[in-house]
Image 1 (cartoon, rainbow, N blue to C red):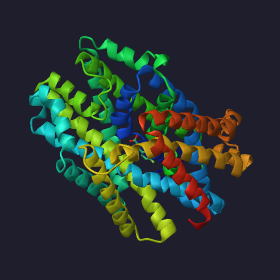
Image 2: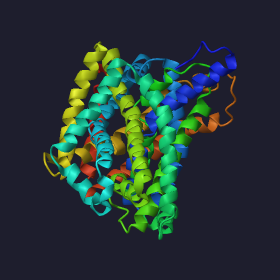
Image 3: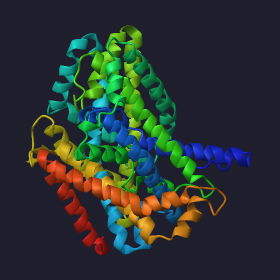
Image 4: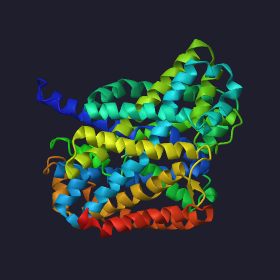
Length: 477
Ligand code: PFF
């Protein structure tokens, strides 16, 4: 991460900081921003969801990310070991993070596989029949075999990158392709906005109608903030452990948060105006990006539309890879540090397990396979992680920082021993110690309660139970 052989001290600091920001942003910006954010906003009523999401990002996301960076840099070891070395009773928080990583990797590669498949589909004529794009997506994801092959390919790419330890290479690809993806998103947004009837989409996205808000929308917005910023499972803590002492944690956190949120909002602007123009339902669900974006490119037509569509899905696949590699790494570094496994064994065994979970997830979208409370595997893994494990994990990380660590140690860590001024330290500390844990507990509690109406409450409650059991077993973990 650091480039200590650069000639001047100033350039050195800047260079390594940018490298770190890009790595952390690589983890944060992924399918969560471009695939999940728009469809969740669409299903949750639009503007009000977006407004609540932004409040969570600013007050909770920013503070939790700063906390994770600070704990990680202070401990300089992977997340589970960081908790364990401070207090064994807290080991379970790290372990829950590892379980979250496993479960997210139980559906993320399925969608990553779709993204790679779309590179292929676009190049073999998908855009030629715009009216069939929607049905083609529905047919594709409910096919029992095809998506599994793409998922396998996607997972293999992850294995290859993490076994070889060449995440540096993928980060480099990300450095070029992510700005490119950003630029394409801007183009898509401009195209979408130019269509007749597009302004209704902007209104849907930015004009909050709070009468549509209930506790499940608030929980969805909170979960989305954690998922999108890669928080609550020790991922950013692990990244923080590689950070140099002299770097400015507050500034870094602000940059990563701003980039991540910018991409999510841009993805929304790229999709909703076009959807309204095409008379599609905003609650179209997980297929949104795979249907709206190709339709827009088909509308553009010609070679330009084709090239941009190709670049879009290449960019999306790389953005997904830089995120899933960080998820896999959380699991792998735990197996290496705590279970004494070799890197290769750790990567291969965890990805075989992930592949099995992904098979269930993928099949569940075609209505095949076991269900729990009428919910298929894909939705179960998503519900457990995004709505419960990440948010409750974030809550526990805050409680750990606020009540188990020293205020003055945290202040020293965040201000680099007083070299950097952080006038909002007191506010941050009180947020982390009191406000955030209470807010998460309330949102999770009311969200779970509301979830019973739609049959999701039971599953979320099981998630809470798993955390409880892990806490009781903590000393054995
Ligand atoms: N933040 C990633 C995304 O938005 O796609 C997903 C993710 C990565 C979640 C790493 C959690 C994590 F630890």
